[in-house]
Image 1 (cartoon, rainbow, N blue to C red):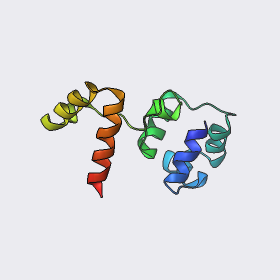
Image 2 (tube, helix red, strand yellow):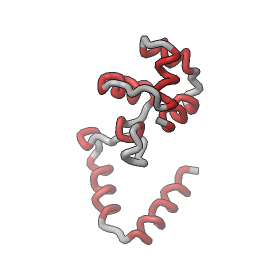
Image 3 (cartoon, helix red, strand yellow):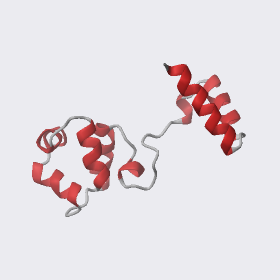
Length: 104
């Protein structure tokens, strides 16, 4: 699970520190990262919570790092998503460019 290592390093966590946070040995974390061991479903959920990513992202089933829960979206956010989904690919790229420019 290459993404597991990337996420851990992005959080500036050592294998030892992550192991302590999850109550497992450093060797367990290492085993997950190199594919020698597979975490249980419960452990995957804990890893996702600690590392701030979705389980699907960790398992490389998606490139979307986090899941947005629709119940947590405001009315404006829901409207924005609805409009965005109706755009062509080219217009979506333009919209993303405009939003990115507004961030600065």
